[in-house]
Length: 224
Image 1 (cartoon, one colour):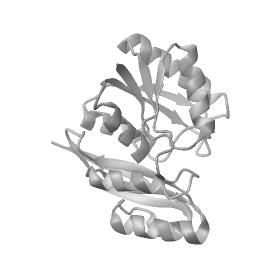
Image 2 (spheres, helix red, strand yellow; image 1 turned 90 degrees about the vertical axis):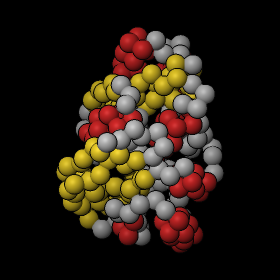
Image 3 (tube, helix red, strand yellow; image 1 turned 180 degrees about the vertical axis):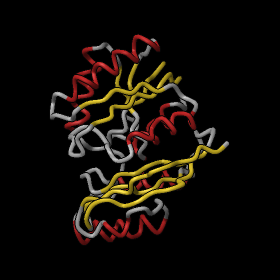
């Protein structure tokens, strides 16, 4: 199938892209950039940098923006998907949904309306296993947002074996979701097996308070 991928630049949408492209043609990436950091639907930290990731992946990118008002933001998503379908003759849409019924059900409704199939490669996959797949497949992923008790120590860190060990401890102590499905953390992918160019951070800074802050990437370099 010819597919469009809902892409945030984080680990889940990137891993979903990686899995979907093994048996399908990826025609484009679709990104919705929300102005509301509390968006129910969309990843927001450093979302403006998806253009650099798309260049590194050598994939076309469709971007739309939204104020991020609950439910209303779905209209902007529908518009972006409709544009992508028309421009790239899509058969379906790929999402990085893991466990969020809210997100998955709403994207499903949009796809049904637009006569598109929905592909959820990570749906109900074991969440620690997702982290292990990231390491096994050699993706370089940074934690760029933390939102929960005991999470501050992870900000700016790479997802590696040490991260998995510590996040499991945090799950046991605080009851967090190890894959960040409860909004405990956000991630940003710098490199991986599907990247034709790698990204490196030139300058960044932290904003917010302990256990509720983000790593703002001020400048980034795309390397050949």
